[in-house]
Image 1 (cartoon, rainbow, N blue to C red):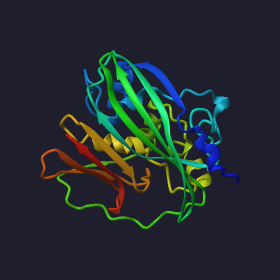
Image 2 (cartoon, rainbow, N blue to C red):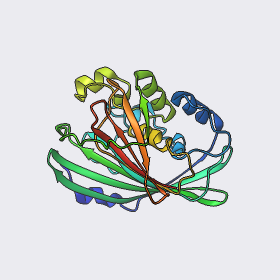
Image 3 (cartoon, rainbow, N blue to C red):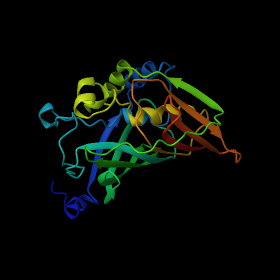
Image 4 (cartoon, helix red, strand yellow):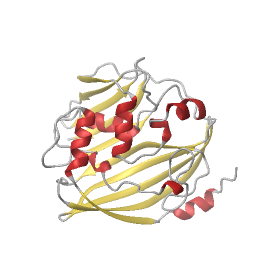
Length: 271
């Protein structure tokens, strides 16, 4: 495999601008998928991921269901692409019915030799605007790795949660979320592919879905939110999303853990 990091870094500075409208049907559909009441005015935090969807033709998809490499994102030759984390700042709400614009820029491309093989990190910065100006900014961390990457040592999750919700993922939940975000990645809905080709024990729960569930634990308006994926979750067992306010009155610590108590995702909300 030829991994030319200098060539990939030529994508730094590349930009893309997309336009969309905050239509109500995706919001109602996600609320139904999460089994909650649909919001009637402002878009909840992270629900902007229902918009600016990657619309690619069937002929443009790779064997894993992802779009073939190249275009806006650099053509990293490593086979596994993961949403590793992100940092968001909320400046003012996005509201149902508004026209919105997203400007994206490749901010960095880095190579690292990990314990389990080569890794390439791509940092994408987004600005989403409405008629009032920039409504939110987002830094999106993407990591590419090799098929041979092995699972690391499990990190125990905190045990001092003030709030905790049990999520029982199944193939219907994962299919519906894939459909709502137009995510063709087969690890989320094609059990044979996920287990026989990728070697996972079951269907993989979407990282953005876990982050959305964590953000949903926060009942106050958020100024900032950041999250980091630690280990994957699967539809083979329930998992829990947890939270605890810190003593400063503005920081909320959040995490997701699997059925064995191992940490799957960490997050921090500033209210």
